[in-house]
Every structure is written in structure tokens, then in C-alpha cells.
Amino acid sequence: MGAEVPTESFEWGSAGMRCAPPGTGCQSFVVMDVRLDPGFFHAFHKHPDQDEMITVVSGKVTQFLEGDSTVLGPGDSVYIDKDVVHGSYNDFDEPALLSVVLAPAVGDGGYVAIDVTAEEPWASLR
Image (tube, rainbow, N blue to C red; front, top):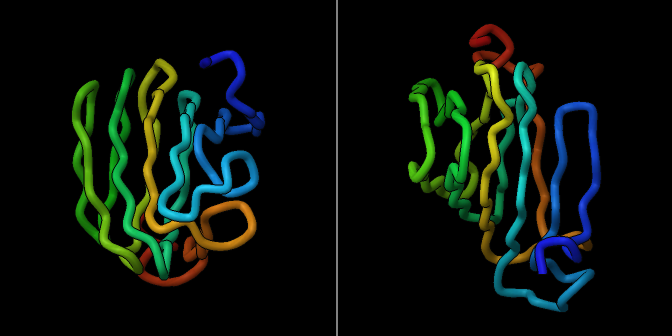
């Protein structure tokens, strides 16, 4: 049930782990509910060993894949190959709710993200 999803709050929003090794033991994939509050973001990063699918449930995000960006709204999704730099930015006035799937599950928590925001060209892109 939605109310039972373990959710952690951050200054940028929240992340709820619907399916990940610590809670379910699943090693095949990870499913997260992510809320990005207005003006916040999941900055440029990559998952070296995981493919990712992000689906916008409500709100909008400016989604970067490498150096290209597009605005995604409700019902839009993006597939991201492993090791591809990407970032999701809520440049809008309402929270963005995202459904995120990563596969396979890796690491203790189910996913590993490598922050590249301090590296060029990402440091100069936003």
C-alpha cells in the first residue's frame, strides 16, 4: 500500500523505495517514487551498471540526457542506458512526481549513482 512505502525526506523532496533489496530482497530491479519540489533537482549523475526508466506521474521536469534537454510532463518517460549522464530539474511551480525503475539492483541499497556535477561539461551546463 502507498502509505506503507518506506520514504525518506530530503531538502529537495522525497524518495520512497517500493522495491529494493533491503525491503524486498529483489535483485532484478529497483522501483522508487520520487518527488522533486519546485526549484530542486537530481543533478547530473550516472549509474555505471544500471539502466533506468523515469516516468513523470504529475508535474514537469527538464530532463537532461548527456548535453540534450527536453521538458517531460505527465505520462512522458525517458529510458537511460547505463553509464549515461543525466539529470532531472524541476524548473516549474509545482512538485514533480516520478516513478523510477533501475535494473539490475546493485549495491546495498539497490542502486549506485555517481555524481558528476563538478565535472565539465556538466558544471557549466546549468
